[in-house]
Length: 152
Image 1: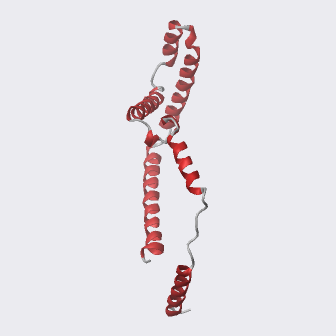
Image 2: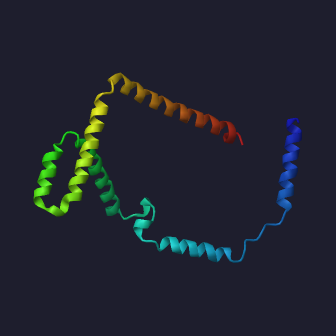
Image 3: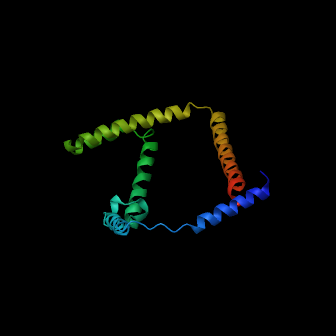
């Protein structure tokens, strides 16, 4: 098929599709869409997406997440036995918290031990490989976009 035939075929299909009458939406569609939008808007803020949360709630969540991550990272260097004993003397109702601190301390110590056992050359090589893979990914994505969509 030569490019001229392809262009004629494209013109014929375009004209044929343009001559078809537009389809009408069902009469109940508008009502259903508006009801769905109203139901979504009526949800409480914590059931909506993160972008719709109030600013103080987003800041509190981000701050709490940072504190949790910092606690996990620092738990390898904190004496969790002494911290657990301090909590046990304050109140007996904090037993679940003591257990949680013990588990987090164990996970932190394990993570710190595993991280320190990895040679630095492997860490640098892994980081370089990840950066290289991202560059290749974006390059392939750009090439694919330009190949399939930019010329149309």
